[in-house]
Picture 1 (tube, rainbow, N blue to C red):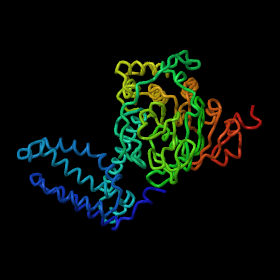
Picture 2: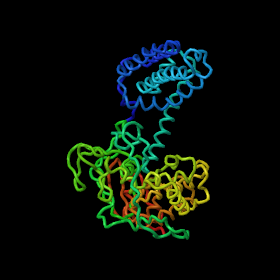
Picture 3: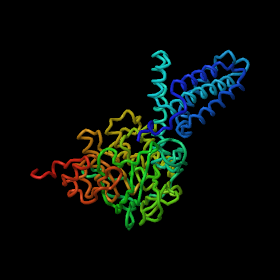
Picture 4: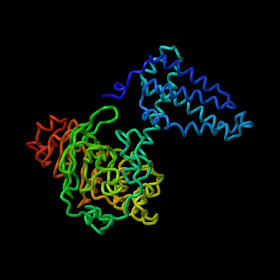
Length: 484
């Protein structure tokens, strides 16, 4: 279901809503700065308009607040030279201009949320407004989306490594996606344990000193998922009663067509998304209702620990999540700072965090780029920098989302060698690269339509031509009959 189609129909046609907002913008702009208390009137009108249009307060505020820093900065710049500075002072002028700008932008954003961009553009044309104004408003709406998306990506990347950035995964449906609600997890524990471990095959570089292999205890299952269902804010059901178990140290592939739910499932392992299901039941062996910490209890367990609000810091220490797009995960000014982010949030000293970060960068063969900005790296280097940032947190479970996507053959081989060298770590790899699955993953789980449709040995599942065809996949060349 598309978001626009699920939006409640506003009580008036788009062109009349546009006309009302244009009047509102002009009236607000004409309020003299010296009569700033009059701005209470447009503020009340804005709230009444929101109530009449019946839009989601969360979606409106998320987009609105995304541009507040920009309009506040403009208020400060304009206030420095405004004629009213003599009466109100520079700070007073800046504050009043900022309030006016926020109210005006809030009205525009409210209109966009209520009607959708396509309806608004149609209404503008019906009103006979100049094409230049239509293009400008279209650009503004796009800019609001870009700002909100960039903020959400940074918060998500920080939360995945234990950041207390206020991103929170437990604030209800789409808390991370929407960027509102939820609480940050704060600093994780400092416990890491273990030393030594296997090096990367063929590289001659020792594995990082945290040695996940030494930390893996005799746990029956590293990952347990029971009755996990999730709906995105637009109403689309991404997961529909997922049940699976992964043993400690096992390497499992999640395969399926686009939209099957692979990435959504991985995000639940790290607590970035809350699963929900109607029904009852509790405990690792029973399916039932679930939001993380919701009425029916948790639906995901990591090494016996329920993925819920009170355990988030520890869960995110144990589960390292590698995003599909490295730009979703890199947010610091230098590569070294980015990789050291996780250890710092686990309570390590700056010196110790830097030591761990440099050790992990050396392991992924990036020690020479530590002081460079992440955006100056190649795509393959950014992928490896993200892996270093995940490993610096000392996880025992790795959730890798399309690790080889968009890599050239040499970068792909290098990354596969690194992933294969993580012996002793539980690895779940969501991928369309079925050759990777044949090389690295003894077991595969096929997802389609948010459900588990097959689970078994990779060599058997991926060689089943009928199964592959039915679920939008194809048999890898080396498993086809008659191939040598």
